Image (cartoon, rainbow, N blue to C red):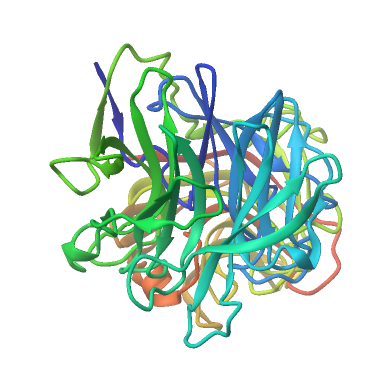
Amino acid sequence: MYIAKNPILPGFSPDPSICRVGEDYYIVNSSFAYFPGVPIYHSRDLAHWEQIGNVLERESQLPLAGCGHSDGIYAPTLRYHDGTFYMITTNISGGGNFLVTAEQPQGPWSEPYYLGEAAQGIDPSLFFDEDGKCYYVGTRPNQSGVRYNGDWEIWVQELDLEKMQLTGESKKIWKGAVHHAIWPEGPHLYKKDGWYYLIHAEGGTAMEHAISAARSRELWGPYEGCKRNPIFTHRNLGAAYPVVAAGHGDLVEDGHGNWYIVMIAARRWEGYGNTGRDTYLAKVSWEEDWPVINPGLGRLEDVVELPGEPERQISPEQSWHFYRKKLPHCFMMLRNPKTEPYTLTEREGSLRIYAGKETLADRESSSYLCIRQQGYEFRLSALMEFFGGEEAEEAGIAVMCNEENHLRLVKNYREEKPWISLISCQKGKTEVVAEQRIAEGRTELVMISRGQETDWYLKVEEQEIYTVAQSVDMRVFSTEATGGFTGCTLGMYVSANGKESSHFADFLHFSCEGI
């Protein structure tokens, strides 16, 4: 017996889809406006996960130009059939529903097969029946006419895998479990003991999020809802409960008769959530041929006891020195970079980031390389040398919520003299929180997070540590304050603020370690 700690994928890991191939498990998640897209994780024991790549690594697979922060890639599904991995998803900013394929989960993945106007709606999934046929399962607006916001339906249509096109007629199979259900979405089909099971989310992605179930003896229905629907939710636990918005689940069986489900939920600190929606694991039992999630408990657990012995424990990277030819898979950018904004080869042991004219406030791809914020108590730091000097140029670290809400500690120049500035952008309005004239030299920038407050520090060469600001409120950068579907990211940032520049910053070290 061993344990999995929840969340199994902390920090901005929404809409998980899980797939088992032999003894190996794989999970993919939504990535929205971030590039590369659709991170893919591997585990041998459901407890210890390692990111092995990103499914969408090329602009030809993932056009994101001009998309909003919470647009882009929605709700991928990962499946394996007859030697091939399939990932199907929606790019709501360009192309709609499409799938890509690969022989190995780490790639390379194919160019997209777009399904066109026939594949309406979002949240596509694939189901391979026992006869080898493949079916598309999705959610779309009510074809009889949308009567209220969220009046959608779940539908099925056969997918021709040779032509990569939908074929035959599409059919609505389910409308949601409760009366006037809103946003029946994230549907997945399974077959067990002669039953076709539909697991889906409904109630929206906020406090009323939930998982519901329906079943039928025939693929095309009719489907009956579980009498206990929704079969899982945290909506009844109240707004003060620290884990909210549980839903959007995908089932998996371990090959030994044990069933589990992965789902999303959001952690709050003092009533606010900055880490986005995480991936959680829960046990599933079957009673009267219906799934029961965490029986006897009915809510997500901090730890999940698992049978057998764990595989090797993987310690996620928290500190990076840049002595490698490629960035680790966990680093992301926003949208598609027009040119490569960084290099790892110009100076040994450093990540050189060039000063683009784009800023964090633009719907462009700025020179911002980031990781997901995974918790609330941590120390973020970067050691850099900034080879700038022009008035508009700056380099440093940033906390990114979205285009209108972000916070950055940057070195910049005024009258050819170096300064340090802590700059906040809230709801599109920029304010200098603190600033100080500093000396030239190698600079270490530090943010210490203590729940919903952060302290900011600076050290230049061998000088003493300087306090820039303390007790900076981070609740204004939470999902509750800003909306949207992503969590905060933490990263390295260089910008010429609207001007063309050939200058750059060399980052010698970057870390985000728990405290």
